[in-house]
Amino acid sequence: MKMNQLRSKCIDKLGGQCKKCGFSDRRALQIDHVFGDGADERREFGPRCAGVIYKRILDGERERYQILCANCNQIKKVENHEARLGGMIYQSMMGHHKHRRTWQQTASVMRRRLGKVTPVESK
Ligand SMILES: [Zn+2]
Image 1 (spheres, helix red, strand yellow):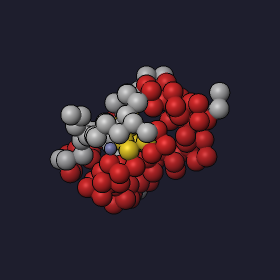
Image 2 (image 1 turned 90 degrees about the horizontal axis):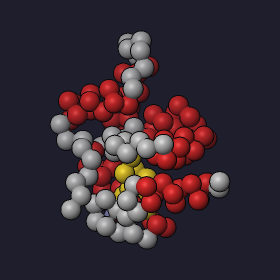
Image 3 (image 1 turned 180 degrees about the horizontal axis):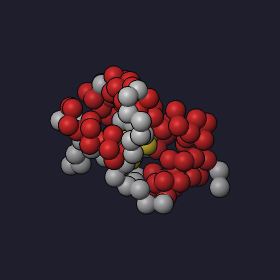
Image 4 (image 1 turned 90 degrees about the vertical axis):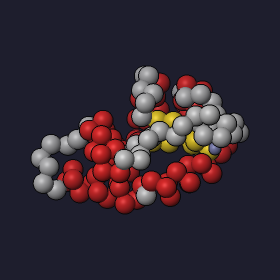
């Protein structure tokens, strides 16, 4: 299956529209990492990253990803300071922690530290 077909299937699976505002033109819909761990995934899987994400979604992993439109995704990024968080997670994984965290552990650490990284509320 081609990547754009896969992407489209994933968008369907995750509800087919922006979770925040309901925007549904898929040209501007993006698969968002609920917990902002996209940079970690890119680091881990490199060019295969998109395929890995699509497979996870189609295998039923729902809590980790959501659909946002480009606008809402950008706003979320600013609000959650994802760049800063990504660096923090990376340091904690590569630094004194011997064991790599699973994304669930990362998410719980982020929830503890920030108290505000939550999936976007649907209306
Ligand atoms: Zn939106």
